[in-house]
Length: 486
Ligand SMILES: NC(=O)c1ccc[n+]([C@@H]2O[C@H](COP(=O)([O-])OP(=O)(O)OC[C@H]3O[C@@H](n4cnc5c(N)ncnc54)[C@H](O)[C@@H]3O)[C@@H](O)[C@H]2O)c1
Ligand SMILES: O=C/C=C/C=C(\O)C(=O)O
Image 1 (cartoon, helix red, strand yellow):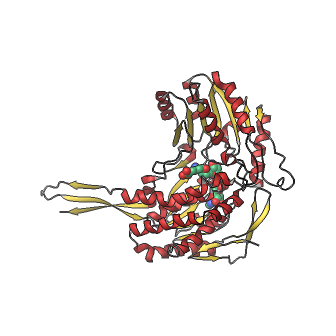
Image 2 (cartoon, rainbow, N blue to C red; image 1 turned 45 degrees about the horizontal axis):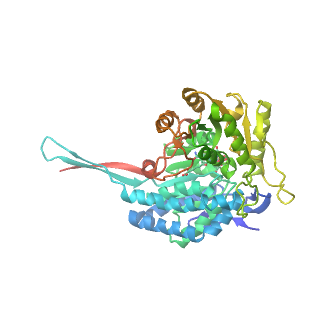
Image 3 (cartoon, protein in one colour; image 1 turned 180 degrees about the horizontal axis):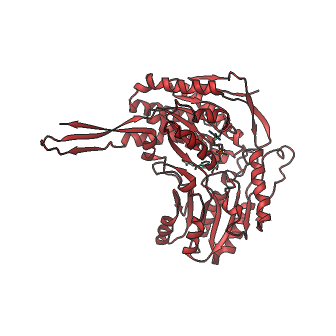
């Protein structure tokens, strides 16, 4: 039986309590192995190891030495690409075609992206005139925050975890990672890579478990943690924010969304269809930036709905290792039940089911998996729960609109504010509507096109703070001003 162990102070360890929980493959619900659930003792040991590492060789490294080491980590992930790909796709059920182009390459790139940013980012300095004419020199000096708690979700497990670990380590911090209970594999495998690359013990630690009364809560409530970065549901973000308030620990929250896609009649329809197919259905709809609300200008509404339906019905469902497959299962039976409850609710709220709405017949070997049909709805009122609540599945509701003012109001009528996608060939309109979106990220004639130097994060209930490029510096470092009287 495979075991997913905690990784503490450079060693793979089980737990004092002996508690384990099952990790299952969502493709067929087969047992992948047992995960060792970290208790308070293991979380204490991980935080202690991370703190000690700050005083050891890691804390004495120059930024250039850290950057060189993280470059090795990125290269080693790429050398062990197939192992990471296999581990990620077994944990999530996602097609190799997706994980080999998104999850694993970005999982490695996140260690390189911040290194370049840090190496080239200037430090501020000011010359102050003083009455005696000799003046004073002020300069900013950044130091690591210390031990960073990293709490990550199950939809893009390696990518979203290293999106935090990369900058944290590049800035000289150490980390204790609590991956999702659904997806322990790649965070554990990264422990091997850290050892192989000579990253000092205690710099990278992994504790497995759940949230409340488990490793997640023990970690965010631990007084030895200096800052907490979290990606997950908004409700969870609120709980973590309360935990962080004790001891005034800084937080970075990347939370849920109910993202609009806005398709104007003057769009390039091929681009809009291709982009919406990805934004609504890639990763089985389990992408926080995904488009669950699509607004289409009335003259092209019928054509758009028909063409998206045709695209959905061409999606190939199947096992991850099939190179033709572009659509896998949801991450778990539990999430499948949640998404199916919204499929039922949509019909109760009066939706027209354009396509999907149920469970596909996958054959005996796979029917025990977390499979649902990709689904399109029309005809729901704007206050329908399916239009207002994040489903986080392969589904979207399409609604016609008539004016720019109307669609801006519709798009912004949500408690979330993560992303938006706008499809129009009119650049003035693109800029005008994008700037009117109450979100953190707005794509025009594209979706999930990522420049890692840009600010990434959500507005309203989609998050707090920005990560990416220099924006992560404010979270991952303390900035001191030094004033020298000349
Ligand atoms: N904004 C983004 O960048 C982004 C990216 C991916 C996913 N998400 C959001 O994440 C959600 C799906 O992911 P999920 O189901 O893993 O989210 P979740 O909030 O259930 O869990 C996320 C992580 O938090 C941990 N956790 C749960 N309760 C906790 C607690 N009380 N204390 C400490 N840790 C706790 C979980 O174990 C997991 O590791 C969706 O809402 C999606 O929109 C947002
Ligand atoms: O599901 C959410 C995806 C988040 C993506 C990123 O954080 C990224 O591309 O850096």
